[in-house]
Length: 394
Image (cartoon, rainbow, N blue to C red):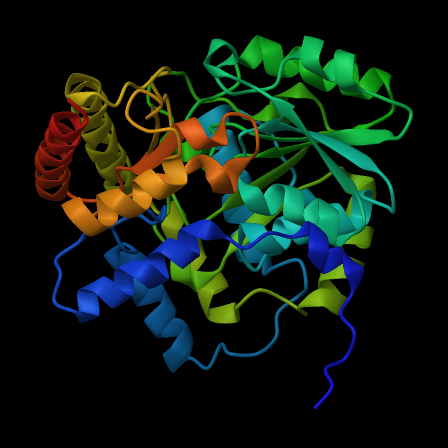
């Protein structure tokens, strides 16, 4: 049977290697191996009681129909209230577009802003789906090498250096996946102004903004009404499988984003939306903040321990739940090293291959979205693995 010819854009979209590693790990576990998962970025916490109760109530009350494409009013109002409470920003609920996860928010943003041949600047390393969404709309992701001396983030100078006539905007993340680093607030303001002067767009992924440990609360929305921000209920709000996120867009663009969401996916899950309102109850926020302190405790344990055992962390992450560790002193290929670590030590980590091209083979992304008990056992296993490897090389 002859298969249909596929669109050429698929050639520009690479497999998600972290998911391939997850498949390999699943096969080992079927064989009875005990693995510690420090790979996929998913909180080990789940939705708080009030959120679960709200979802159950929505089920019992039959709130199962389509909603407005841009979200139920109660949720948009609650999100706006959160910006006021945490960041001191007066964001009109009408500017908020509720989406089916942050992925759908990226989909809408790229559909609205990226046209064929449009170049979008982003740091290397960065979350792989960012560049793939740009490519899916026939744009050209321009990955700019950003090393530890830049905290793995873009700067105003880099934007100015790499901006060309075909460049249409920048796509940033602060804090970032895979590095857990943020863009300094004043630098982000300079980037936004540089892009504005060139008539471009600035999209900032803030899905880890709630998990910032060393800096005061800050949102790029404070830099001007033209900034487009993406956020999610998956990370700080511990609702990965609920597929709920949002965008904040300039008022004039809301009808355009609404039109796109109507056509792409109709609306986000109604149950998830009704449950999401309860995320902003004081009791829920108190629990989220307690969990945030636990994430920080894990970071403060893991970073020095990795440095001690021979996996240096060049930049201490200030947010999210990732560590970007330099493994170049151990191996030339982080991809193969991650497989060896999984097979020999029973610890699942992710190579930098997913996150860009520049120096990708010298870094491992290690997630601390798991218990302290698991982290301590993982460090012990990694210490033994590295000692054996060093002994074989001697």
